[in-house]
Image (cartoon, rainbow, N blue to C red; front, side, top):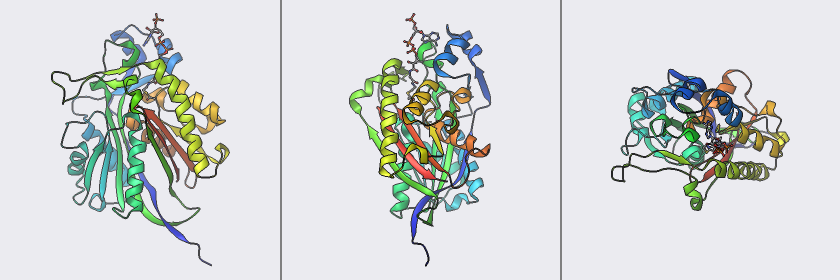
Length: 326
Ligand code: ACO
């Protein structure tokens, strides 16, 4: 008897872009009073990439998108939608997604940006998954692209050492697959605007003379992050009738090694099954999950058929999870 098939959003391709310029902790120590030891001990970060003038949010997003399309073997003209998550768009409007559309020649797509800070990629995946389930598009580019170096306050050593620039993209393709087949199995999204003053940018184009810098209460973010991320992961496991033993890989948002380890410990996930790239990229906000996922896929750690749990938390506060089989 043939197995029943269901329509799922399958990760068909992944691509990344990292700016050419790498900035070590020692170089950050030339700009602010800090040290490699302090940064590594508190965060696990060893270096970050900072974008040059030509490496804009759209430029990096388009480069990552081209990589995802090439891996999937899908032509740009066959893309139905582009959802780009960013807190650092090139312009207030038009959306960075339409600049990416033009750059890659995705003539038949529609595109828009979403703002959910470091949870942006998970939010975009959730939206894209719903759109594929609804039959609105068959191929959707989901992109996280960030140039946080443009909003960092380089006089604040408590924040400027934590972030970096980069982009990651996945192509989600609609496929009819068996129950045990690949695709997104669930997404769960949350926000709590009463916690907005914990992590924010103190300006925007809508505010006169206020371009804006990132402001953060690091201790409070840390305290909330471990609890909320563990609860997001447990929610995804319960929804899918799974335990953490069933998960092959946890790919967390890469903010801070101590947050990643704290969540891993709470879940009983051994460190060998948790992907960490924060040491090389620092916190690239909405780009951090696809950058980490791409690295672990390309070095052969993550394999087809494996179950992957993604989780993120960021300004809003926003947080959430996505479970997928490759
Ligand atoms: N180098 C040297 N000293 C520093 C630096 C620095 N870069 N930054 C702060 N300090 C000093 C402070 O001035 C303070 O000195 P004092 O005791 O003389 O006043 C001391 O270090 C301790 O400062 P705290 O802010 O209390 O340090 P803490 O141990 O909390 O570590 C950190 C700070 C790393 C930001 C931590 O709070 C943290 O990891 N928070 C999570 C925030 C995060 O990762 N946010 C990312 C965005 S949100 C997300 O993506 C999940």
